[in-house]
Image 1: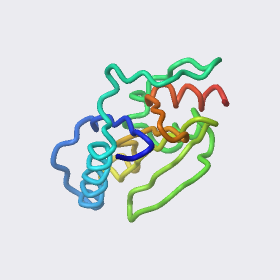
Image 2: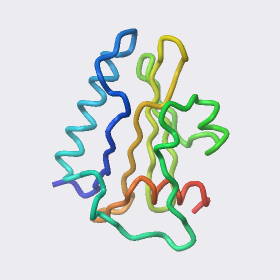
Image 3: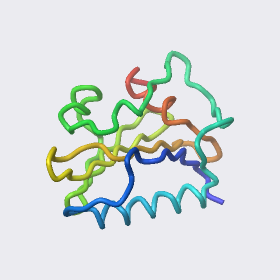
Image 4: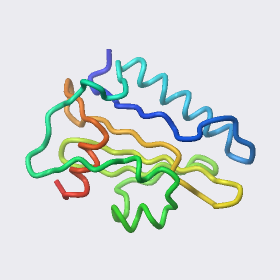
Length: 140
């Protein structure tokens, strides 16, 4: 269907939430799941894509629950920042992929990473989130 495949990961602790922004987060999550389904995305098992030379995989799960200041300390400032109510999306890019980090308000801890996703910037190819994040960290 779509030219670019998205490798979608489940949101840790994605049960019912209370507090402002929960409705926006649930709607965004539903749209992301729909996009993954339409694009044929999955968990990445068996979907290896083509690795960029000089980049090592970086586990994106370490971002889950991280505050924006921690993300900025690890990855620098994003190339794109989009606000949707209390939620915010940060996008980082390598020459081959785009890595999106989704943050939402937590009632006690403030804004935290609740989801991430990666997509190839080349039609017809796929990329796993650990590959894409590795390329971004390596500066490729």
